[in-house]
Amino acid sequence: MAEPIKIRKIGNSLGVTLSEHVKAMGLKEGDSLYVVKTREGIELTPFDPDFAEALDAAGDFMRRYPSAMKKLAE
Image (cartoon, rainbow, N blue to C red):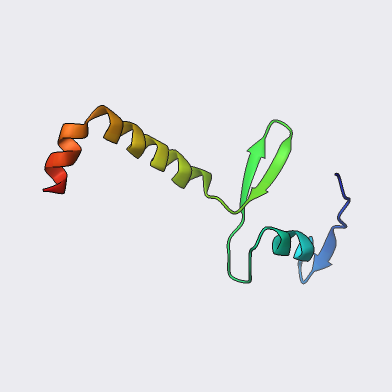
């Protein structure tokens, strides 16, 4: 469901208020949201896409080199 959100002046900047959306995502003050550019526009996500990419690469390495991982664990 699309819901319009007003852009407002906040100090010398422009911003939006996402209080209900932030609560629905289980986030609280001090948490981070990442802005990800997509073909459709932007996406706000609490997950760091760069960290997710690094985690995928690490998982791939561990699957490809299990003996090296076993040796490192010793």
